[in-house]
Image 1: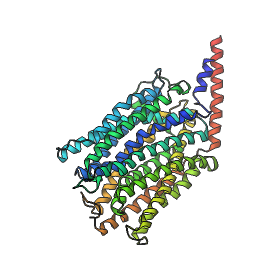
Image 2: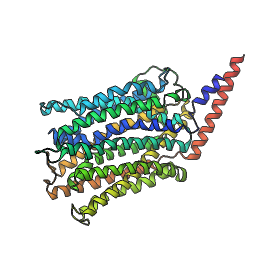
Image 3: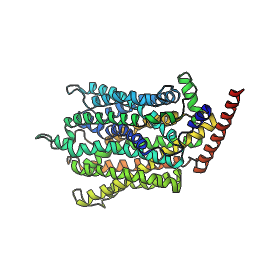
Image 4: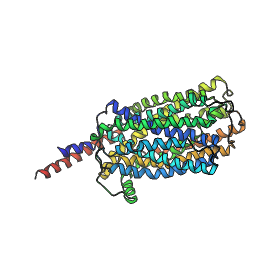
Length: 498
């Protein structure tokens, strides 16, 4: 009986997890959503335009921090696959990361006010490393729960949908709060736009850190009751660089994973570039007010809900790979369309009501498709777990998600560097106020950005097309594993009865 129970747990729970568990699990992604939104959207503007640090130095600090953090991913993934504790493999990491992530994120937004540029650079570098490292100790083990909570092909898309919905919504809550409440409250007699008041970012740090702490604890506590149903740890193995990379090679040696891996590289650079320049475009290129930007950001709540609905439908009707490619092509070709229309002088001038509504609607729809695309790719990773288990005899969920996180973090900073290079090539001025940037500079900003982002997105789709695991193949993998475990269980019971 014990052998049979243990064998069944290695497949995860094929039935649908309760809604409360899925909600708590998804809510944990708020922590990553908040930190990623801060790094991607506010950090460059805060440290370069508010604190006065050269934008290239900000890019270097964030990139170096990401490289340090990336080293932690395979270590944490390997560790969480092998950890033996009364709280299972994943939850000790989840609980232990809560306070360190929240505290370091608070300090990131509160640098000393009297430090010079060199001191400020080292402060930014150190805190960026700490935040990125601590969030890895939560995100990698918690992400690895997707294939453990359910083995069903479509249910994994649903779980990934909850995860991405809360991740986008959580980060978006803080962004909306910034533009509707915090930035307007930071307007003074000498600062007409609260985006350029450092007090706004101090307030942001307090609220965001508290939300991160709550998010991690809700996820850990809400999934705690499922520990007994999760896969047991792998056979104990000494953790070393050699053992980690040896297991990585064995586990990830498949054409489908290589396709996802390569797509993740290109997607991470594109995401970093797009996110880092997002508020440059809304603030300077389109000339929107903080309130208008806040409304555009509000649209992301609609996008998250639409994306979470689109992905499972695409999974059922098209399959994950085909659905991801179709959704991705529409999303990524449409993303720079408003900028292109401005560059060729088709749109009316800034300030016309049409401009705001056009950007709002196109951004909301495009972001929904991007979220749907991301949900499907996460579910595609989860399906590779059983394929690898058939080949290696090991369930290494942590290594799978750590590997993708590793490459994303390793190259995501390149997107920020690319953004700083685009700003440099456009000759974009530092400490620029809204309305003070020359039209020719804004035109160059769009002209350098569009071909770069399109090349990255389309290359990503091309590489993703090499993924070849279908629904039928996944279900065959589950059947083969069930037969293997049944045979192993029968042999074990027979041996114990002799």
